[in-house]
Length: 245
Picture 1 (cartoon, one colour):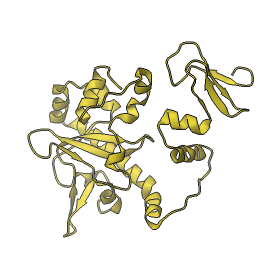
Picture 2 (cartoon, rainbow, N blue to C red):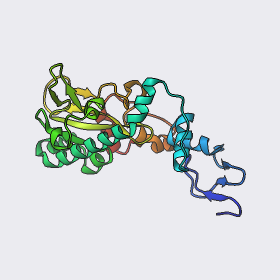
Picture 3 (spheres, rainbow, N blue to C red):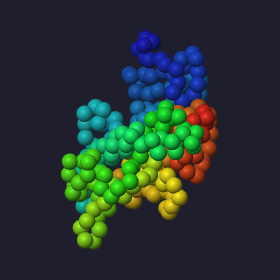
Picture 4 (cartoon, one colour):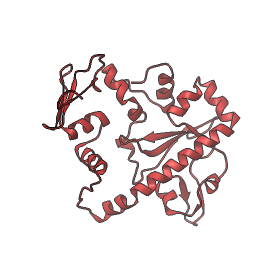
């Protein structure tokens, strides 16, 4: 606290002496070092990488408020199911991470690619074991519609179900809100497809997500540049060597 305001080191550039000021009375922030300036909404948009509507919703949620929405029939279904679907993805991530710890073959593959356990944990990397219905042991209801909606399970025309990802290294795809929206799965040995992605779902729109962007936000800001690469493993391997932007 500094008088009626607050001071801190600026989150938008590297500094040792605080030059970032927040004024509760005037409802704005300002950095005398880099010139960053704006309202609470602008701060969340810049710091979290969200658009205006997403920032408003996040601030409202933190204050215990709900933002009214005009919904079409399709958007209503997505809004209603969203939180439950994210919980499903989180549980699947936990399961895949536990399975990685049990698979010497998968661990050996990651070590062979030069990855440490620390960097694998940072990106939430896991392993989907071979077999057609392993997720049946991870979820109490394998017949749940949510497993199909999230793309974790495929249901055939005959009604039979099977896991979409089998015998693959699993890379969780985190959206700009920090929620797991989809997965990329890389096969361990030879085979096609080499990479298998989640399908389009209420949570995952492939053209709107960039793998690793959520983890890279601060390093990108600090470096002032972005390095775009092709694959999941490229992102993780560069981070392993200190190139996190």
